[in-house]
Length: 184
Image (cartoon, rainbow, N blue to C red; front, side):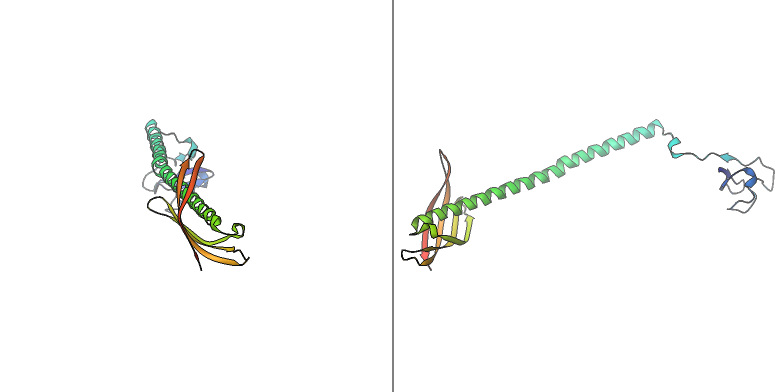
């Protein structure tokens, strides 16, 4: 198929040969003849392939500059927006994990102290425990314990303890002070 142009309206017409051009689909006239004056034969136009188009050096330079600017903007976005967000999330998660570990250590230190006060420490069952950090960086621990007395009967008691993290040569230790055990 070749592309021809109507001499009257300039419409593009696809045809096998010039003999197949009887009537223009746009204006309805014979695309080969002008009515007022004779005209040369209709032009043949080669249908250009998209890959054949050549870009000017200026166009190429503009496209390369745009691509480079876009890449730089993407890198800057990643460095200044994405990475700090990940870092903040990571720091928050790390701090939360450290606080949870400190809370568990304070509860365990308070349990140890309470067990030392009981007649039958191996029978102790702890429940409804709660701990929170105070302003002076110590932990207040509250909870309930159930254990056997001298006669084998189970008794329940509430306890309140203040645990503070200390350091020794062998590592961190927890000091428990101010424990109050009350019978229910």
